[in-house]
Image (cartoon, rainbow, N blue to C red; front, top):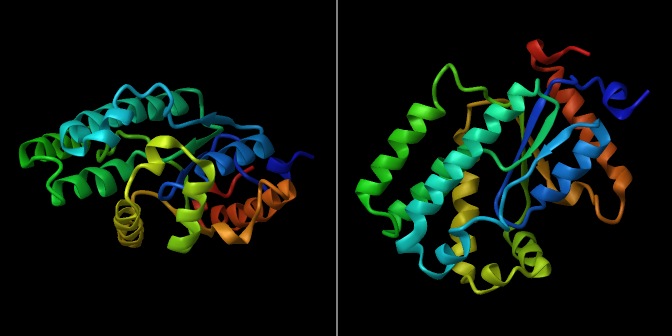
Length: 223
């Protein structure tokens, strides 16, 4: 019996991982996919044509970056469900509008015209009965100090040059956003409850939590 069967997780499930920068979304995405024998849907960072420009000039590139992310994530969402599920996804499409676009508009680094264009497009594409929402969102959370330490540890140059106040703003916005999120079921997971880098077997603690959550959702209590 494999781990997916052991924990009675549907073979066609789509699980998305959410949380602020530095909480380990990619690590848990890969660990869960390996344990469940699922495919991964990873955030495309290295080939993003706007990301480095954005970190150097928020006002000039925030709208371009958000449109790029929206298009890429929309395509990925369709792809996962066309495959018939069985995916773990690194970062959700909902964070783009609920966190990033809203933050840049309110801080004056995205114009009202660009923000209206973006949010109207998001609503038309995503917030409709026809859009395939994930079966479960795993929200990774921890203290702000823990998150900043992880950002420093992984050492991406564009992130190291970003003022700490930006990460603090994003952290608080994530905290506010998840408390009102309701587009799909949520499993909140503290990053200090497991250590996938030094103890790979701790993935089973997460699988047990997923199993418990799925059993609370009648349509997903299936093998």
